[in-house]
Length: 118
Length: 175
Image (cartoon, rainbow over all chains, first blue to last red; front, side, top):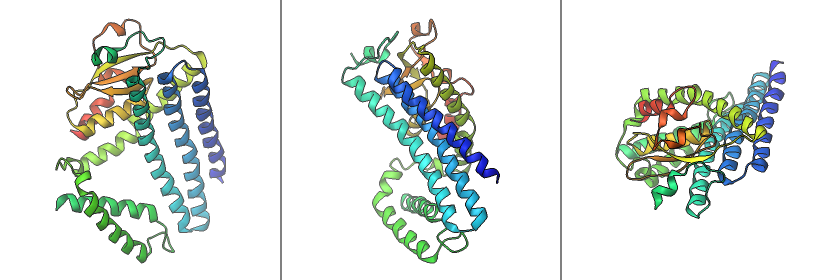
């Protein structure tokens, strides 16, 4: 069926973006730029891997008509929303804590926050 | 009374979403609906003052909820895709010019500011670091500041986005 062709494609896109986040974590110079790499790309990559799960659930629901596949799909949708909100909030908390404990952005051309806090 | 009813409704809808498909043909089993109602009432008693702390009910307006859904699915998702290609490009080439800039949003409500801060974190090359409580300005870490941009004292929130102005969308949803 068509779903069997779509799900691996979605999984591949998701894994590429998640892998990119990991490479960024190793390559970037300081905590802020690393947060850029690992919040954005992993959220986006996980959306695609979750889409693959949803496609799989829809496929099996059409084939078997069992309610458990609706449950699987809906739980994945809720997990994606929870992940998107908590990932952004967590990144914000880490960045704020880092700046408060005196970590200044490496190679920065401007830092308004440093001036505002003095 | 209104905060209690709203909290119960939200909790009940969430419970129904989590247990959809428990019946034999894709609908809910009676036991799940009953337990959901009891639990939603318990949640309503405990949490009513957290959900509606300011006694401000503009978010139950269905027009705002529809706008929120459209916002998440279309402009926000497009911005996120652009953000990811942008970050992927910087991961590979290593071309960065980072800095922290003050960003003025002109949003007045807590919810609006929170949505903007989260949208900024998930969209192109920007990460919200801190907030100025008195003026509502956000401090945003930008991974690649354009030449000359660092001379400005502050940025407008709309300038951070490449495809569409998400700050204007958030103003229409939350204020």
